[in-house]
Image (tube, rainbow, N blue to C red; front, side, top):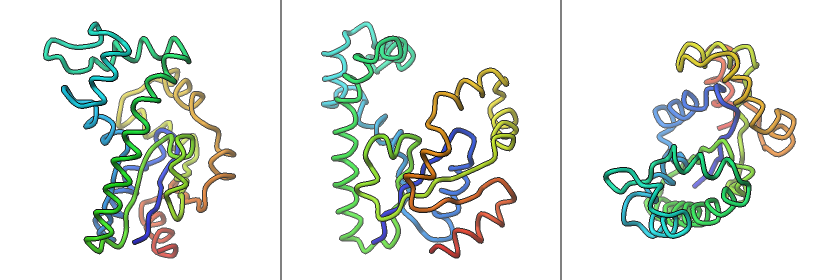
Length: 193
């Protein structure tokens, strides 16, 4: 089984690449944000640890985590963010490693992990290859305005908050240019696989 990590900046079209890999190559696609959300549902060990660390005021009326309240706390303090990551990241990594083993037993051929912070969170170590989905900034901006209705200011803030292109290029095994039509992206992926 081949394990590939997919990363890239906001608006780069990672979702389109994942869909292509899933539909055309029958890849098992795992988005680390979704794994993290599932592990933080009410009553889970992660949920309990987060509530213990941050207090019950971060819960909504159904006692699920109120992500906006939690975000306000952790983005005001690097220590609090580190504390949250120290609870969530190890649990996500353990879950992913268990899933990879399971899929290997099921004879899955292609397993794809996706995360904006794939490299920063150390997932490259469990991937045979890491792919940087590169897209020209002007195209990213157009996509984010069209699909999410974001303002130029918000897009600029989001792009600035992420690792620069040079970091991805230096640390990823492959670069997929997703600035053009999906057919061009499809061709590049076909050549690699």
